[in-house]
Image (cartoon, rainbow, N blue to C red; front, side, top):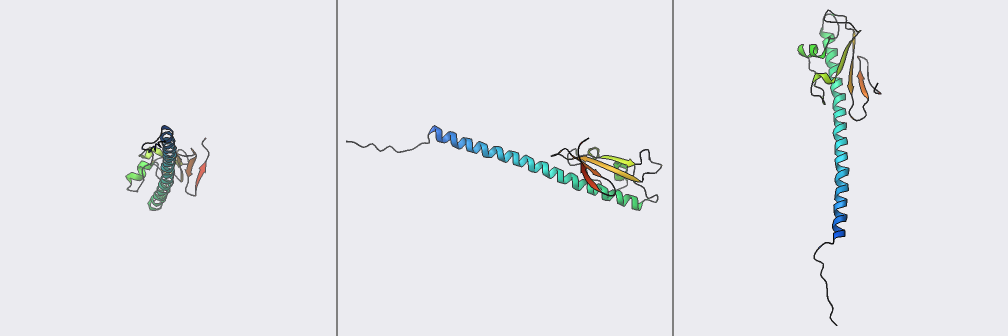
Length: 139
């Protein structure tokens, strides 16, 4: 009787399918985790940028003779104060800046302000005033 020893020199189709499926699942998990990390980083950058804008607004108010806030972020930037661009839109329009009370203008009267920026992951709105920064549900 002759014994045939079969040497295994190749992978079976089932083995290849299992390996490809595992690699695909790992890649999918990795892509989702990466996208979440990027979104979280953008949200952190939005919070940091809004805080920087708040600091610039306070410096503007303290250095102005009228002790008032500017009528726009462009006016703040034109006065040589650092205003970081919005991390998502890459301009100043990503922030919704409202000098208060409504109706104050270049002639003065801007005693307060509100800055709004939308968070990427949750869709919540980051609201900053001279006193605090808070998150609220989208309206």
